[in-house]
Length: 508
Ligand code: ADP
Image (cartoon, rainbow, N blue to C red; front, side, top):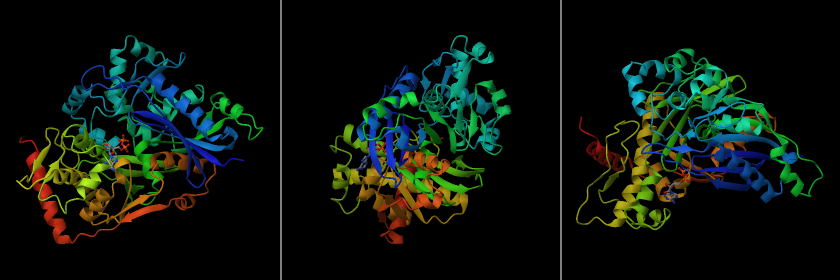
């Protein structure tokens, strides 16, 4: 009897496996951190074999913990850190270089060259992206140009490229399936999001051979089977059933932010999710239309299901929860991130203080990489509590700016925002977010939206769920934060924030 779904959630710092019931409840979870490699300033790598081994280990661990047999798992879904680039030899299965992580800036200069060649508009039109070292394309080129013999091997058809989903899929199927999904392909800067094909023109301009690229499938799709060998230990350990280990279908793949949008059931155009982690990632469903932003937000594929592709606008705030870490680790004003709520609510307001945590510049809609952190409005009466409160408020103000830009780009009247991520547990922050946006903020009971999205996509593909409507029934709201602030006060506060941001911008 197939009663469960398995999520493989491969993140930037850890690999996780979560088993869900059909109702979307977490049955068990296993997690392993892996090594972050920093070969030089601005460079970030992972050992691709360690990613694979850690992912394999947590599958075994979660099955052992829950006693759930492979035969009881209806399907598995993969969700992953996006853009991270792996190239491996298809015969030996060995990576020819470490995984180059999305955060890695090593190709920033090459990206400047591409911009100087006048490719910005072409790349934006075809891929929905800004030219940036963040995306996979220039990382692929770097490996091919810098690893001895890599180009010859690629030309001889010996190499494969994949984002982390593709790498795991290839390993889990013992090399039988070499594929990715639309959402991951859309983050490579090589994929045409309109034709749904790898783009020959871009590949030629960047000198990337197309024979190394995986085939691209919908996000909800039966990709292949997790080989029974990788599930064997578990069925031996359980005496609940006599069924022998069997393969489990991998039937859903999506990049982490896209999976979270799906896991939050943002199925209709105009629906938004905001993830409050180290940074904030906001995605707005724009339906079957790829909307181009006037505020330099990214256009991306939300997911592909059956023959339909839906699109999303994406904006990010670089420093969100990280500003709370700064309060804790650098200023030592709080002991834990949770403490921030306690101190912030000891004062009635921030007493005119604004913190602009532009530690690494400002993203959408300002796009000033030389902006720097600023605190304004300090007076003799300013206390630690005001600074803490203003720091939490800055997370909400920055998200406000992204969400207002999205509303402007789409002419949408946004009704509500679904939230997840570590800092969404902060009730003060969520209430302030509702107040400053004048929009309801909805927090669900199960906050594992990313993993949920992956298993929902998988469950749909194998018929475990009959429709998106059925999935919607599984979501239970924990709390809705409704705006309490009057408009006059909101405008005064926003004006103050605008002035503070102006002071943090570089002067050029
Ligand atoms: P990531 O996936 O980016 O590592 P998480 O979703 O795990 O992030 O969230 C962790 C971040 O959220 C940290 O930056 C932490 O400072 C912040 N955070 C966690 N709990 C709270 C809280 N109660 N209030 C404010 N910030 C919090």
